[in-house]
Image (cartoon, rainbow, N blue to C red; front, side, top):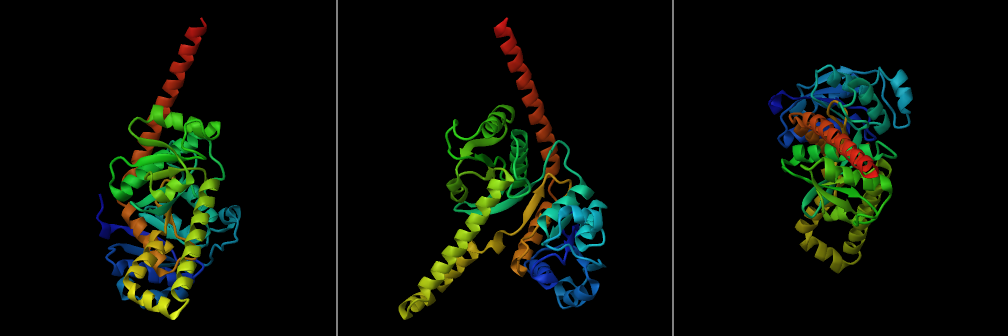
Length: 357
């Protein structure tokens, strides 16, 4: 097992909306806060060299030139065909060839997913990848997946998402038995379509080691009812964007309320420490960094518009996972659960035939 100082993170420095400065500043910010890793930056060397040189914490970082950048409008298939000279492709290549332990990119999500699948492949036994989101709750943070990799998912894929989410949460927090729930329109067993009810049955019957809670509703995500919330990418992405919009609206209302009058401004001044703590808890940057679970390598997608604090959060996420063997756990658990499911199906079929006879 490697030490954290031996970890090398491959950073796609060019894909974010805020440009390479925010990325370099974010890495430097993470190092200032105690992160001890080595870094490889991929992108326009002429732009990156002065930025890295201006950050004494990371002056020894390696810079590798890439001629082009994957834009937010590029289609994944276009990048697969013509994107081999981009910073994103080069960063993922470094991971695939063993030069790095994880990749961080602020770039195009679809393109990053396609390039990662192409170069790294999928974990054995997993059909599709899933993107995670960290969700603040009264108990700390929960993990929601999938939040955008797949528009839909069948029952087998939902089961795989649950297994991956459980292993990811355990790697992130060291909680031995994270609670897992399936997002549904109601908590009762009869609610929802047959696909999600089948997934629930499989998890109950074929994965007895999982702390499966059952169904959870949308309001349970922020309540922290379970540690891991599982859904398809369409539903998860809508939930995520709705929560981000609600947080921005609430923040704007608080700002308007506290600046609406002289008394309000005086009150805000007295409450400044508490308001600062509230702002930090509501800031999406503190939970930035979606992990591509199911990919045979650690790939962390930072929000495209992330500032330095947001990039630092994603970089810390990548570093914290680089030394965790959760991929091996996913492989063994998926295989065991699917084998148990097949055995249960065979048993039920035999019982039905015997009853008919």
